[in-house]
Image (cartoon, rainbow, N blue to C red; front, side, top):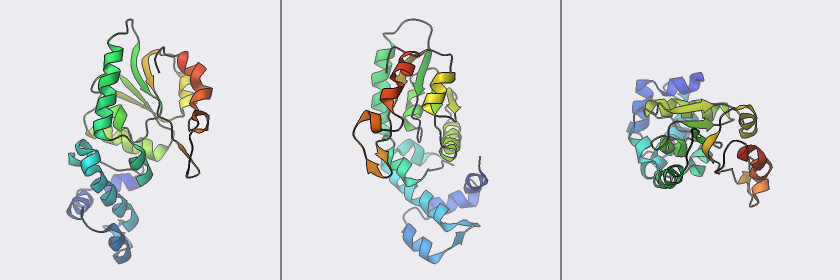
Length: 208
């Protein structure tokens, strides 16, 4: 895990984040360049994101030593209520599928909220995320939350699909609908491009 993330897990840093949860993070940035030896911006992001998670992700909010990603990743991730609903719906589909297949593949892992709740219903769950900083945060959080049946892969959806020999009961994909900060609407314009991946996906599963 990158050293900055390790430093965020220091006891005094985590305590500061909790103690200042309701502070104005912009005021903190104006007052401090560094806090406990870390860039104030890093601390401010954790404070702001933890506050946002209080109602959106109560399991993550209540746990000790959870790390939060850049705000855009937190904004794009599922709420806990939505993630639980997806997991329940997918579980009802999986129960109808016969044969020896690996559990669920989450091709667009992101902050790992969907993956975490999938892991409560399926054995196992494979998580794929190309951005290394986000990948390391999520891998740490899943371990902290006690999710032992999630396997993490730091690669792109396309590379993973080409390299894996598994067939899956179900593959889940929720592509980013933003490019260069502009919202897009066509599946082919999303990241990853689901349309171009369809043949690969259906070579690994019957259920998307």
